[in-house]
Length: 344
Image 1 (cartoon, rainbow, N blue to C red):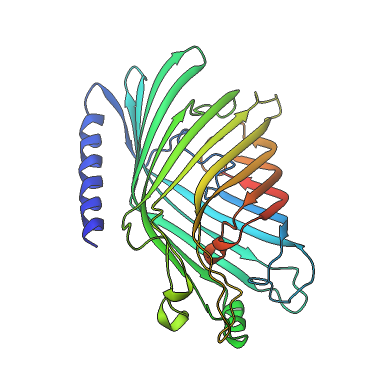
Image 2: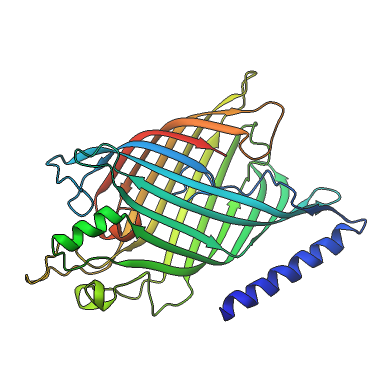
């Protein structure tokens, strides 16, 4: 809470300073103005837009309510994210811009094709203090601009579905639940922000996540849920990712091609969800793992509106790495491919 109060004060001071500059002759901007730049790229695993996947996905006993013998099954995943504009302004000669915005998102994993029921497998949410982003337009050959964004404080909390939780208790799993909940700060550096999303662009981004409390780690396991003796966490307080996105010129009908890729190095959590109470537990060390996320498709840009939900995209999204959802991030070789709809 002390950190949160400090961040609220910092953001308030920044917004007040921006407002004063906006009234001068050097800057122009104002509150709640939408910024065309600074949005999540399509391959981002935790984006700030709305996304729905119908995907052919790796099956696993840890989340398969119906105990299907299939190695892969169809599943539905949804992300509900939004980036709320708080302040946006730029230098009068348009060489620099500043954006203050707040982001929040939640993902929902649904087993809609289960034989006995259609349970919610997992639900995660992310929320934090407002982020501050700075853009500098340089227009030097290939490099149009660069941007730096700092999200000082973010929180993620994860929850598995009720039916799955009850089943884990009834089947006497040693780990009834793993509490994946952590606070972190995030810094991103972007080359070639797509300020005009209707134009051809090559965008490159690198991001770094750092835990606030290094000793607490990414997850906890309380005694009533099995205890930390069944886990092997280690000090791994960071997550690094690189992203690239290409967008083609927009056709006269408002369509353009999109290709996006993300490579992320993150922690694979150190426990085994298959342990049964009373049996000799299987212990798994926490490790580092690379994940790969790709989107290829087409986007429609509304011709007379550039605000929220003015861009609709449809394509194929593929993922490989450890499971990216909730307490299941201990599972490696998780694959997913399917149809993806994005609204931003």
